[in-house]
Picture 1: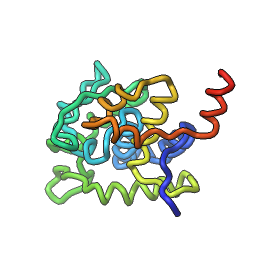
Picture 2: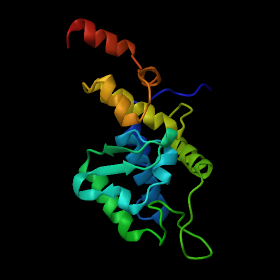
Picture 3: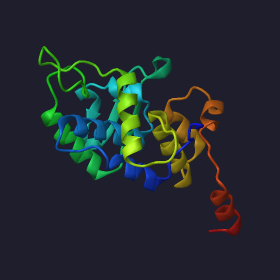
Length: 187
């Protein structure tokens, strides 16, 4: 099955509702996915975050050494994510990373391998009954599509996504028949 380019907002919400928030792993994974969905950050960038990279009071995340070695700042918009991040920061295992593994022999969380997260993500997609093949990177495309649909401009999106060229950002443009109809009908 071909990879889906982006999810509609209701599909993102359906996916985010799958992890069980009472379980440490479920809470952690929900926060990771929602952070990706609200900021457009890559899975590897989120998994590499340290507690000091997230400023709850400003709803701000500093992505250190993103792809290409660049540092950038992104923001999330929902109060819900702020509350979930606060809850996770209080419950997370001791580790220099914000999102470590929950269980380890040493008692300290280790880095989550992106491959492991992708496997868990695939289980969430299946549980959400999204009838498409979806990877964590699709959340980045979904963020970009939603940002542009809400009136954001492509140059700002380029900065948010951390792309060095506008040509790369243009790959995130997903115009649907619905978008064309709305634009041409004037509403």
